[in-house]
Image (cartoon, rainbow, N blue to C red; front, side, top):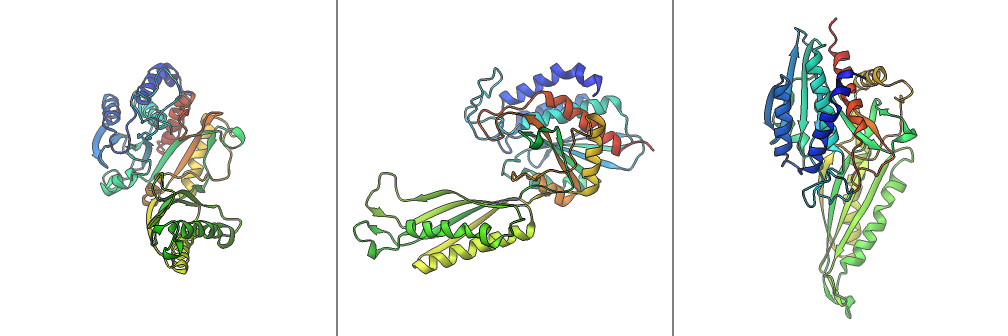
Length: 387
């Protein structure tokens, strides 16, 4: 660890707790961006705002080196009511940092401050603070704003807390797949409504939808190889009016979540959803309308970047704390789009035995602030070392 981080710990905790108490959703990270930009300016970074609407990039150059590195943290919160009871709990009803992005932001601020103080590297550092990771397309928005053209990066890295991590180690990174892709599907079943006493005169979308739900389960069990990791979840079945006992509705809707680790498998699943919905509905005399929203592809780490990240983590923690491989998680992250545009690696720090992310009682572990800041410093100085 670094003594400076220990000395700054109380200040860094105050930043994290302040961000936690004032969560901002999606692209509405105006206050958070203000705080990030203010600190980066104070520490000597060339600060650029409005990238991907409310994204912030701080650039720091040292020496004459031509190598460049990007470090990314997400800033946005979730539309959830917090129930932690903490003294610094969310002050915004219906909004909370239940995925730890307050901590991700603070870890990168810790590293940015230490790197600016030490100036122990030769090249260009880009610290990237992204809005709207939680399904609203913040990563894509920054890329469309020419993030990597304006701030070229040889490699880009991200770090996230992970509660209850596998084998209770500290730091997790590996080449290849780390997190799954995520797709959202809406299937609208168009039947023919009518009186519940005369079902023969209807095409019941509830019955048709039930058949579609069952048929969808065959995609993973019968069309996907057992060694592949994939999930098709029907999370909502919406039909009829509440309190209606005797009216067969005209339509029904199914809301699906689809996850996989492989682009070929992902494409196969999406094609089969379309085929099953269309064919099953046709068999009942109904019609299917399938809408697809791609949230993120799978997070696939570059081998060199992942190994570099692990070496940096080992130098700060220990080899025992940093397993060389682990089972990929079925969570998703829109950092995947950045990895499609620029090679890099996504890593995770164990948050400990805590509620999981996206639970209303989750809270980021403050002990990770120093660990994350130390990792960011070691990684940057290792890649941009003065040779």
